[in-house]
Image 1 (cartoon, helix red, strand yellow):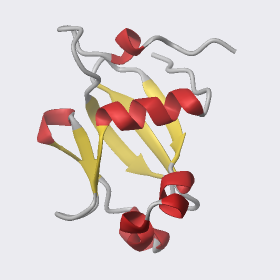
Image 2 (cartoon, one colour):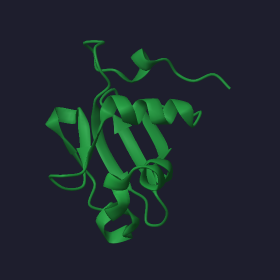
Image 3 (cartoon, helix red, strand yellow):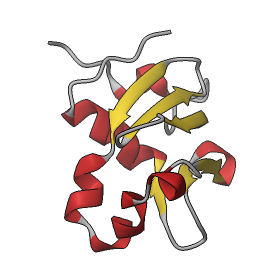
Length: 102
């Protein structure tokens, strides 16, 4: 399965992927991400939670649901201490074989 190239999700400037909106699904560790160019990607965030100690608080579904876009779309965050860059999120989507759809 082919994966969309990074430029497919970039802003019109063609520099870095930016996130327009993010929403945690009601159950599990899935994120519904809308990129600045309007493409949407569904990303399983379970692996970073399982592997990285800093994300342990995200095991709590109510806390996980507090995800929001920060830094003009260059990252997402759950608190002042827990964030994740748009670049890393896009790479995670690529590893999961996600295709962005407009």
